[in-house]
Length: 161
Image 1: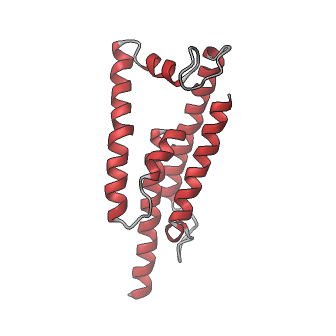
Image 2 (image 1 turned 135 degrees about the vertical axis):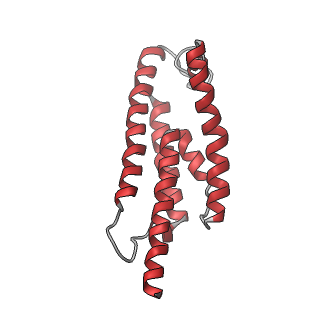
């Protein structure tokens, strides 16, 4: 369970780092509500993904980590065993390879390229956040950030018009 708590702490720390690095983006927009309906949808999806993932991760640790003291390479309940179990049959292989490629390649390439274009600071942190939260949360958080940035731009345009 220590590894799960460590993941939680690191997840919150990375999210805080993203927000602190982009304080202007995460500031309250000049007009409108604190969160737009679309931002709320993204956050609800991302948070639901984390909650569901944590349920399964806690269940995994409770069922497999008997007597293990090494969460990375131990015989039971470790990351190595977790990854092996992801690829236990062709159906799991298919879903796991798709998820892995999307999380480890697509998410960082997209958020880094698009984030720098949008002027975000440290967009690679959205990928890092996915390592401690979930792939879905990383994307949902990025999409909510883009929506927030869009709302700021829209508010600036209405002031300048």
